[in-house]
Length: 143
Image 1 (cartoon, rainbow, N blue to C red):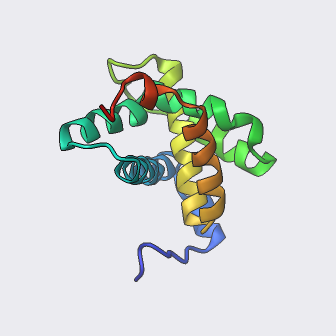
Image 2: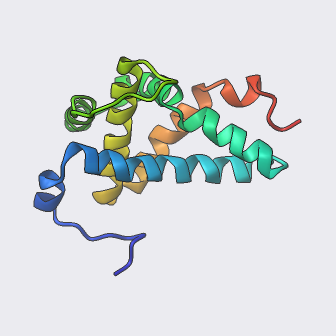
């Protein structure tokens, strides 16, 4: 099986739990962030780790969701809402409940897009997030 080019039937994707989509989407989003940082000159492993955390934390993902929500199709909005409304037992200390819910919605959307083979759409949304996000510049990661 080629895990980079999955061929998952649409009915199987629909049958996945919201948290399963978010679990996969979290990894997809983090891989995209790591790829971005490595190709944009972050010089050391410590700074790479710090920069990655600044993008993949729940508050940062919630901000990212705010950047792309106006761009989503109706179908994408439904997936985002499914993820946002997922039931989870605990919220990390570094995030509010709303930030965590919103971040889970973003992750579910990225997982769903990945499973549906919509790489161009993933890149389009991710590029929008990175263009709008000032964390990279504010943290002076490249210095």
